[in-house]
Image 1: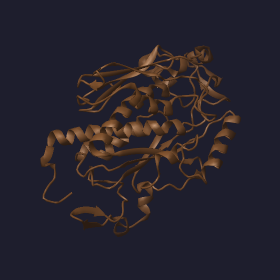
Image 2 (image 1 turned 120 degrees about the vertical axis):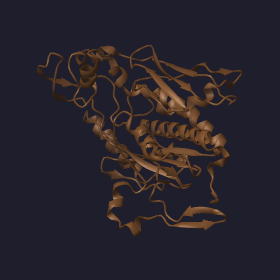
Image 3 (image 1 turned 30 degrees about the vertical axis):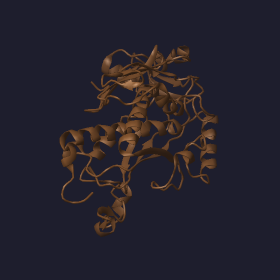
Length: 368
């Protein structure tokens, strides 16, 4: 019903922004995997509010508790439930929004669909829902790293019109975490941060682009037609709050090339098939080809701004609304761990599906 994602590695997130807490149930995790809260907490710390001057000032420790699915520090193969308590919510800031719909927010569409909504903090439409995704994604990243040596990373590459220069093959986690924007281009970052702070001072917001990569993905993951690997990545990314666009590899810029220019030529090197370029973004025909996966996700400016705007109320009367409460002027820094989480969830689900169908027989006579 829209709250569950995945097939063999399946997650269901739950909770509202100003409710008792938020969390996730993970089903399909392999047994006997070492797992404690210490494996999950670092990614939640990167996602939590109040971490810098360019994020919402809401103060949440986002301390995770594993409620089920482990014993003596190992996974059991049974559902893993993880919970984070909501600690710092101020519902009174949303009183006016109980009757008035924020422009470009989900207030109206939730009311239209359900006829009832948790308006404090946006309820289920809040980015607070992503706590569960990031917790589950931290678990998925741990499995991908331990079993296949896969590295999943993301970073900010553009804020409005300001662009960074980032090589998907070489940027590092340390570079990403070296500044509050999570952009690995040290030369471009100061101007980007200044722009976000300027928009915040104006009571406005700004959007941009997050680059996601996965290095070390084996050849053969993904399925044809409807379950293409890039299709599931697109679904995962477009399910994130404020996401408005997805492109993989050369993306929309690829239309500027001819077929001959765009094709990734194959070569055999030391008994393996490689491509001399990677305009495909590591996926061809919906199946991974062994090259680095890379894609970009566009995030819109945050909908809640501190300016009077035209809207309607629940009685369908024209009115105006000025945003109140605590909100991100730019989602990008906190979207980075969210993009990583959804990447890891998609990849691990496809890894388990590949092994279930093909096992050791997945490789053909072509050495990969």
